[in-house]
Image (tube, rainbow, N blue to C red; front, side, top):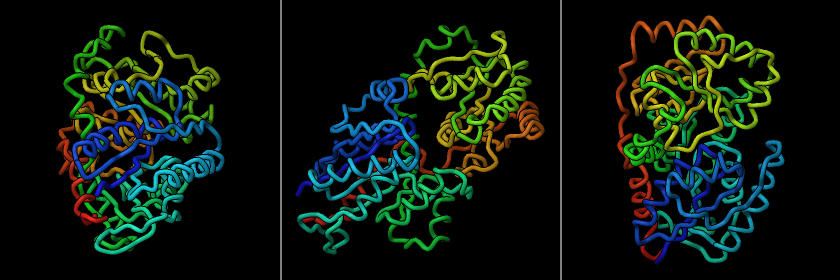
Length: 379
């Protein structure tokens, strides 16, 4: 019997995670998987270019929810996704990461009843199997919207696929049954390893005028760092000190650009290169050849660990501790003293990290194999 699965993506961080999953599903004859794009990120620079670079098939459906407050966006995804469930009657729904689309689709799925019962773990059930990929990550910072999304999604999911060893401990501590938890590795690293060779042929360094290992890369998008002009100005004053040593390339998120202009701190073009958001392949090349990456992104902490590139994380916490314990990441905080101290530490002792277990390019294959084994032939 063909198992119908819906794989949900909504925002830029989701796309490198769904790419290997869709590939693994297509290679397994038991599954018919469809890709649902919620449209949470709809700008071509944040969405379309990723589908092109990663060669992801066009989504089977785009819900086109657009932007809005957390409540408005989440509610709109829920309203539109329920109609998809009603039409598709899937055996399983797979959500990735921790964006608003993740919790919205998980919540609708957890409450949805199918017209025909299915078999899972040799039991009959009337709800689709709810699957969370990248489960168990915790920052322990309840002011982060992503933390709320992660916690709630994990509680209502039937299968939790874990990418970081700390995720296992987090889920067990929270009382999640062990039979629901599987440590499979990191699907985003699947994408990185599959794309790295092609990415290294990108001409981006020459186009910008950069020399390998003679620049730093910056990404910022968290509201706590970019929404307040005073905080943003203070942060860039610190980063400008680093830019004296290493020119900084900053592909700025569309919502950050006007805030740069409003912060009242000029960025000298001799040490700052402000760019539009880049495609996946160009950005991998930019990271891989940098002397240092500075970020507040969880995914980039993982990618720099896999690439062996030093990373300063501009946050007070991280839900990806393996990148510090085994990788090349230093938690630098957001204050001048802590950021510059972390930078000086890196200058004196470059990070020599290890690749975490199962970050080997096969995580998506493991996920699909486990799912297939848990559905009996007559599911």
